[in-house]
Amino acid sequence: MPSLCPSAPSTARRPVRRSGLATSIGTLVAVLALTVLAACSPGSTTGGATDSSGATSTSPPATTPDEPTDEPTTATDEPTATDPAEPRLLLATEAESDGLAVVDPTVRDGSAVVARVVVGPAPWGIATHGRTAFVATAQGVAVVDLDALVRTDLIPYRDAPSRVGYGEYRRGGMGIAVSPDGARVHVAVHRGEDSTLETIDVATREVVASTPVGLRPFDVLVSADGSEVYTVDHDEFSVHVVDTTTFQAWRIEVAPFGTEDGLASFEKPHYAALDDDGTLLLPYQGRVLVRLDPATGTTTTVASAADSHQHGVARTPDGRVVVVGNGPFGNATGGPNVAVLDPATGEERVAPLTRRHETVTTWTDPGSGALHAVLAGGYTQAEAWDGATVVDLATLESSEIQIPGRPQVVVPFPEGTDR
Image 1 (tube, rainbow, N blue to C red):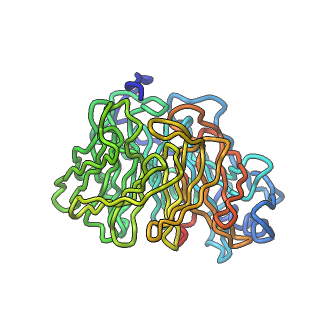
Image 2 (cartoon, rainbow, N blue to C red):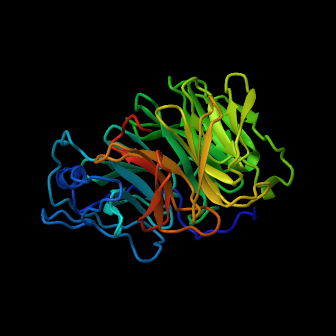
């Protein structure tokens, strides 16, 4: 991989600025519940971002901004209680912009973005707890009220990067996760020469600990009991295990193909998923799925025939993993694809794709009840694109949706058992 690139200058530890969106989640729910529940298949289309109810949404900026918007916007409707038939939507970070997009994956004939909140420059990871989202931007962690669709706070990093930029090598927040009780947020902060895991107390909105971890932590995960946090350190072939009481860290090297070529290697970790037994599942090159026991540091592998440079991974309710394949890099020679692998049995299905992607999540179509994978197009190297691919996990048939701003990470909203 190329060396780290310089980014546009910015001021660290910026004061909090509040911004919102001229719509409320209550209005979106009322409209989308009717349209989505009427759909008879994943391919059915619904209306766009403006409809007869008067609900509107802002559009992502046409050009990449240097700073988040200063002027707040006021919601036109008061937030209302969530409808029991609330549709399953997605939240997506716009990596080449400054927004958090609310996405309706059933919209296939135009932009699937039905609402948007300005959160700050170059957002990467996103984590939710209840009706609150925490977004890792280049400047700090944005706190978003998902009922009002308003950014309520921007918590600056303790180890703030010296400048703000966009793209794969931009500095700032990367992976992010919330503790099971919602009391703490753990965010990986990359500063160029080093990276740390910052722990934020949600009640006080203060950083209570900063722990050195491996370079460029793409992903952060929390154990089921909240006692440990795991960072997937892309540039150091490692996972760091951080104790959430003492904040002591333990480094585990995870390099099934060795560490030859260092930063130029493609056989490095990107993202992980947690299994029910607490082990981490990390895909490598469409050749192996590594199962890491963070308690002992030992690894085992499950063979894969996907043969594609792999990034994002998500887990289905029945224990399978869905993995993004980006094509021929390093020792992987196949094209872009999506792989569905059962770690327990080794059974695997692979479907070719025409585009590359960065991350993946699972999503249940509220009309058909079918489980899908949604792959975000914000690919961190080349060929990033403004959209996502929706894959029916029963048939592996796929279709594309439009999401401006190169969506980096997607998660279901509201939270559910399909993730």
